[in-house]
Image (cartoon, rainbow, N blue to C red; front, side, top):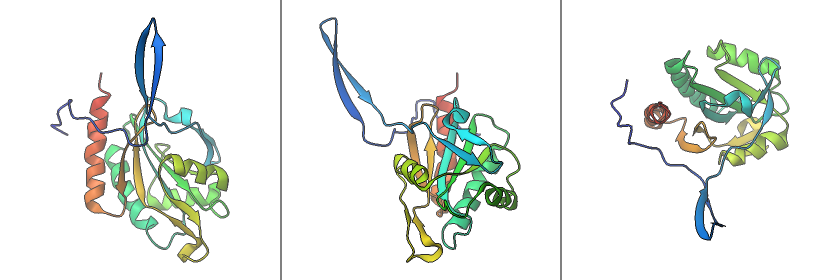
Length: 197
């Protein structure tokens, strides 16, 4: 439970665009915030998952790969804390994108999710083409790269990215840092309160 004031709001992250339009002789200035675009990927159950599956929800997204020898195990264990805390709460979902487009097929993701302790569809593990996954990583402001010189063959940042119901980025947290993960949990509550009717 949280005693956060409903006046507390998280910022919207990303470059905003300011536009002007004239209506009835009056100049109106609009601020357009970047949004996560439409997407579709195959999940751990070989089902097509799209942005529509996250309508009217907030969600936490990240990028990983199942045989990652560096930051992924810590990042996924930390994201599991948030999943466990909000398990069964249909206002929030979790979305992990594999950046290993060669190996991480749905059955591999399914085994990984099961081993992690994820047993429902509140946390989706998805795979797609290199262009689609790496392209959407840019929209989440997450660095991803195929790199044969690093352990595991892929380089990426370990951010857990908090997305609101309007597909705006509201926070990014180092998934390997306990303090940052605690901040994510706090900010999830702030964001949920923002959408209370």
